[in-house]
Image (cartoon, rainbow, N blue to C red; front, side, top):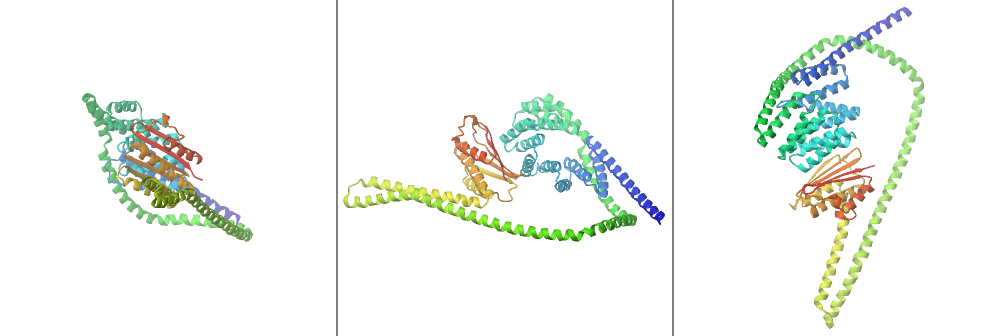
Length: 556
C-alpha cells in the first residue's frame, strides 16, 4: 500500500516538473522576442520592433505574467504613437498599462502614464496635455521628473503664452539632470524651438549647437533628423543659405534612413495579418483544449487533496472563531451607532453656534454702523422742519448734508449685504463661485479670464474654501487695478491633499523687490493667509511681460 502511494506521488511530481519546464520554455521565448524588439526599436527598425513586441505580448498574456504584459503595452504605445500618419490608435495600449499601474498602486507606472497621456494629447488637445503635466508635477517629488514636465509645458505654451513658456523653460533648466543625455538633448531642442518661434534665430542656433554636442543613448537617427531640420530652418531665416543647404542635405539623409512611410505601411499590413492569425489561433485553441483538460484534472486532484487537509484542520477552530467574530461585530455596531449620535450632536451644535454668531454680527453691524447714522439723519430732518418754520439755517447746505447721510447709510447697508452674500456664493462650492465671479468679470469685455481645473470633485472644508476664494478675488482685483492685463489664466487643481493654484496674467509686471508686503497691492494680506494655512506663495514677474503667482495649500 505504501509502495503504491509512493508511485502516485512520483507521477504527480513528474507532471508538475514537466508543466514547469514547459512554462519556463515559453517564458524564455517571450523574453527573447522582447529583447529583439528593443534592439530593432533602438535601430529605428519599427516594423520589426512591432512584430516582436506583439509576439512577446501574446505569450505573456497566455502565461498571465502581468508585469511583462504591462511592459509590452507601454513599448507598443511608444512605438505606434511615434509614427507619422499611421491610421492606428495607440491609446488602448496606454490605457491597459495605466489601469495595471492603478491596480498595483505602482507610483512609477502611474507617473509614466501621466507623461504618456500628455504626449498623446499634445497636438490635438493642449488643455488635456497641460492637465496631465500638472498631475505629474504634483504627483512626483523627483526633481528630474518635474524638469521633464516643465520642459513640455514650456513647449506647449510657446505659441499661446510665451511668458509662461519662458518661465517653464527656466524651471526645466534649473532642475534637469545633466547626466541624462536624452533629457538634456530634448530640453535644448525645445528651447531652440521656443526662440525660433519668437524670431530669435541666433539664440535658437546657440541652443541647437549645445544639443549637437550631446550623444543620445537611443533613437540617434530620429534626433539627428529633428536637429538637422531645425538647423536648416534657422540658418535659412538668417539668410545664411550655405549652412542651410548643408543641414538640409544631412536632414534628407537621416529622413531617408528612417523611412517612416514604408514602416507605417508594413505595420498596418502586419496588423491585418495579426488579426487573421488571432482567428486561426482560436481554432487551434479549441483543438488543444482536450490536452489542457487533462492537465487541469491533475491539478484539480492535487488542489482538492490540499484543500481537504486544510479544511479538516480549520474545521476544529471555525465555530469558536465564528462566535468571536459575531461578538466583535455586535460591539463594533454599538460603537458606530454611539459615534454617529455624537457626530450628529457636534454638527447640530456647530450649526446653531454659527447661526448665533452670524445673527450677533449682523445686529452689531446694524447698531454700530447704521444706528448712529440714522440718529444723525433724524436730527437733520428735525432741523429741516425747524428751518421750514423759522428759516434760521442755510437750507441748501442742510439738504446737501442730509443727502450725504442718506448715501452713507445706503453704502453701509450695501456693504453688509455684500459681505453676507459672499458667504452665500462660497456655499455653492469653491469652483462654482470662482467660475461665476470670473464669468461676470469677463462679460465686461475689459479682461478675459480662463479657469482650468482638475481634481475638485468634492467640497473642501468651508472656511478653507472661503479663504481660497478671497485670495483669488484679491489677485483678480490687483490685476484689474494695477496690471493693465488683457488675459488671465487660473489653473487650480487638487491632488495628493495639495491645492495648487497657478495664476498668470499678461500685464505690465512689476519688480517684487520694490513691493512693500505690509500693505502693497494686498500681497501682504495674501502671504499672511497662505502662511497661516502652512502653504507656500511664489511670485515670478517680468516688467512688460506679466506676472505668475504659484500657491500650494495643504489640506488635512
